[in-house]
Image (cartoon, rainbow, N blue to C red; front, side, top):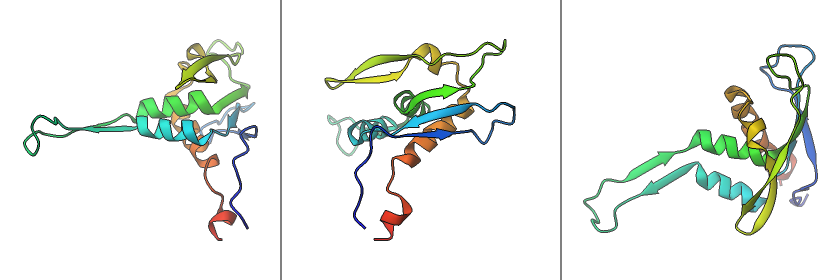
Length: 141
């Protein structure tokens, strides 16, 4: 079986393992194009040295995992059902445009992204990464 191209219009509905309440919040996760996926992965870590002092300079490594997770959710979350505020009011999904290297992406608005709990952001980011991988059937070939 041949490798399948990504269907950039497809969406997966996901319920968090941490969601113990009723009704459950349903998160709508989308497929990322490969260009933005790789760019988001590059944000996760940085490594630099001082070129003016080769062999003597200490290298600096940064692991930006939180920022990377937030970006994966910003680009990969396409909507939700049943996400409520602490006061019981419905949170409405809102997107905004972000220009990345001349291409416009519709991403989760910061006002929405910043109120998603951190553990949920981490879990959603992992799920978004997983749905953008080659499936098991394709790996066997």
